[in-house]
Figure 1 (cartoon, protein in one colour):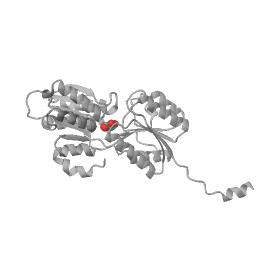
Figure 2: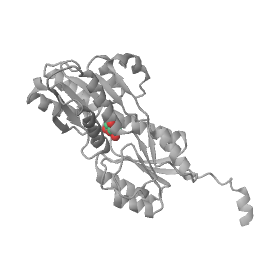
Figure 3: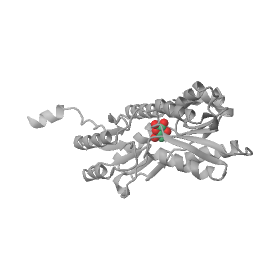
Figure 4: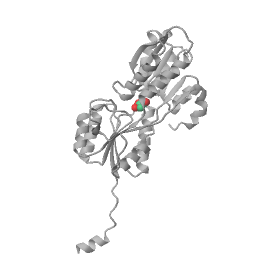
Amino acid sequence: VTSRMTTVLPEKKEQKIVLGFSQLGAESAWRMANTNSIMEAAKELDIELHFSDGQQKQENQIKAIRSFIAQKVDVIAFSPVVESGWEPVLKEAKDAGIPVIVTDRAVDVSDPSLYVTYMGSDFLEEGRKAGKYLLDKMAGRSGPIRIVELQGTAGSAPTIDRKRGFEEIIQQNPDMVITKSQTGDFTRAKGKEIMEAMLKSGGNHIDVLFSHNDDMAIGAIQAIEEFGLKPGKDIIIVSVDGGRSAFQYMVDGKINCIVECNPLLGPQLMQAVKELEAGRILPKRIVKSEGVFTQEMAAKELPNRKY
Ligand code: GYE
């Protein structure tokens, strides 16, 4: 009887790969595009995605990763809100034999075997690109050039590296000084709030705003306009990311330069998941290649922006 039963059963179905993904939050246009890209790519490649939003809190992400381990998913991927503090939970994943892919933001761990690959942008280079633009833009201008900086989330890889890369380059012009630097947590609301405070304590002494992302730049633009100054003219604005709405601000002359950071990591991530499951070894670092856009190119590039 048993043998007859097996012959009528359907062919053994291919098991879907299960991916647990811990997203860090929903703080920016970049992040929303990143999440959509991951969800769409999973669907397209028929990967079962268990998605969790950490709401910009490391403890939530650690909980999510622990629950993926308990669920025995095939692969775990995550975008770490901050760089440090991941060793214990990554060790738990390793002990459970579940490979971990780090995506978008980097982790700072002493044991590199705790993850299989890190896939994302070169934030240090992004900071340098912003600095280089400013060096050229301000060449020949005398006197102090006073820069205010809106930093992203404290302790996050893009904040640490964009700041470092930017400072490394602007040092070449001793007239350039960062007069104020504060975190706006990568959000529009905080960008506005902090820019308002900076303007109140010395608005006419700000020449440049370097914002670690578009959302904070857009918030700051609102504050600058309400203060009665012209963004892009009275205050030169350099931002990072390159989403559609920021591009529109650049077309309108309110942002001077955007250093691109590409959030569309989904296809590459799912590709890596499939390769891992097929037993291949991945390169330890996969870098996204990105450009720099200025006002002169803004109108032409706008229709190409995917988010
Ligand atoms: O620049 C910012 C987002 O981690 C590269 O996070 C990402 C950054 C991006 O909130 O807009």
